[in-house]
Amino acid sequence: MHNLITLIMADIFERLIKNYGPIGQHRERAHGYFAFPKLEGEIGSKMKFRGQEMIVWSLNNYLGLANHPEVRKADADASAKYGLALPMGARMMSGNSDLHEQLEAELASFENKEDAILMNYGYQGIMSAIDAICGRHDVVVYDAECHACIIDGLRMLPGHRFVFKHNDVEDCEKQLHRAQALIEKQQSGGILVITEGVFGMAGDQGKLKEIVDLKSKVPFRMLVDDAHGFGTLGKTGSGAGEEQGCQDGIDLYFSTFAKSMASIGAFMAGPKTIIDYIRYNIRSQIFAKSLPMPYVVGNLKRLELLQTQPHLKENLWKNALALQKGLKERGFDIGKTDSVVTPVYMKGGVEEATLMVMDLRENYKIFCSIVVYPVIPKGHIIYRLIPTAEHTQEEIDLTLKAFSETKAKLDAGAYKSAEIPDMANK
Ligand SMILES: Cc1ncc(COP(=O)(O)O)c(C=O)c1O
Image (cartoon, rainbow, N blue to C red; front, side, top):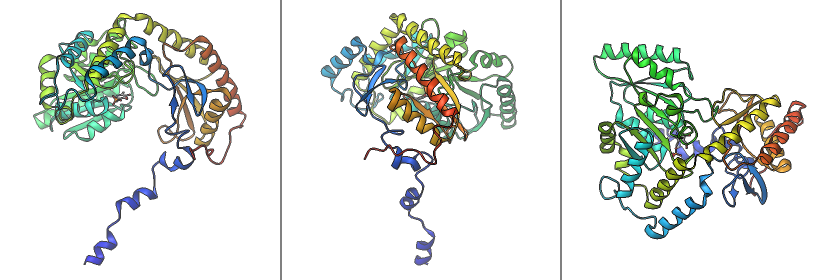
């Protein structure tokens, strides 16, 4: 019997190292270059990669706050004053402070909501918020291209989930009717719609206004992850809800601090009663240490600048539009972006994509990120460019020239190769 069990039972570790996964399989040639590259020096539109200065298009430092002198001073002063330890413990137990509550109040007011709750990270925060909000009879209706943190939050959902085709309002309505029918059959439960303000890969805004309008046909609550809209969209920068004039219809507004705020942490804003419910029931915050004081103080400073320095958002958009216009004029397909996220769609295999990226880095000193199979279908390549308020017109022009030249080489088959180049750190 014992022998039989040893025959059937696999060693988990052995299985893992037989298949490192879709990207991990390339690690021996890619590590440190195509994956896990190290950008060094001051954060900005130019940084060093393997000792060479590059124009960088892969940092979500939209407003350029990462290295803003006032932000650096606030971060440094708060670190000197408080260290990273304070406050000790979870918010509910011993980790609360006036400054945490002040940041929550300022975020709520900026988002035109009654209250807000801070979260240590966006990823685990939103997962855990979905877990706190939804019960076993509730149905979540969500966009097919929602970020991994939403999909992972839904893995914990004890109730049903219905996906609608990406940004397809008609399909969303269809799924809402399915959800309604299920709830009527169960005689219990409600509907939560989850979508995003801006989809981070393609840069298209979620059709928030049209989805909010569906509330007149089927009653539901709506949660929006606006990671890429916060600070970049809307007259005041408060996000996609403001941009589309439907902030009131968004019941729960969420954003990470990892993009426009160039920091760490996240928040969810909504009605006081519901935020209070979440505060007392969100496991990722109840069972984890609260945001350290320097993060809170640093985030207060960032929020102040985001609200009082409109030229940062104006510069960001000036750069984004110049880049997008230049790419379109040169015949590049940038898809349906209506945000600053700028994808460039091309055709080619993973090997070609890596050779082109290498050419861009080594010969043109342009650092950008690529997205390939299995994240997108085989044979497609997306170069994802993230403009910031700090980029210059000269950097945009150099990038456009580099893209035209490397695209011509791609089309001429110059990057054809049987394998990805070996660029790993040795
Ligand atoms: C749409 C979206 N939601 C959530 C997150 C996760 O946020 P965080 O980095 O704070 O965990 C990200 C990435 O940062 C994101 O792009």
